[in-house]
Image: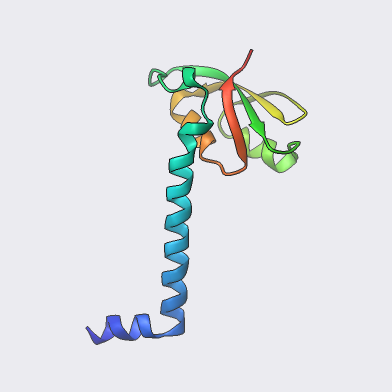
Length: 109
């Protein structure tokens, strides 16, 4: 018991605890806000299916954002604040919505 007390009593222990709580809060926030970013037709995707998406950001995408989104599907172009992705798996749609800089996710026209 004194080991736990000494851990939480130390500066390093307090720092690790605060960082862990902040990380858990961020994960909870992204999980709770992700469904609201999805277009209604994306809520009922069949597992294993693939869709073409339009991912809207709050800003024009830079190279970093495009490279990150390419991890989920093939880049079909970017215009203004929208990045178009092809062949995104149903499992990755929610992962894209969990990215904090993504504003909305919808089916590509």
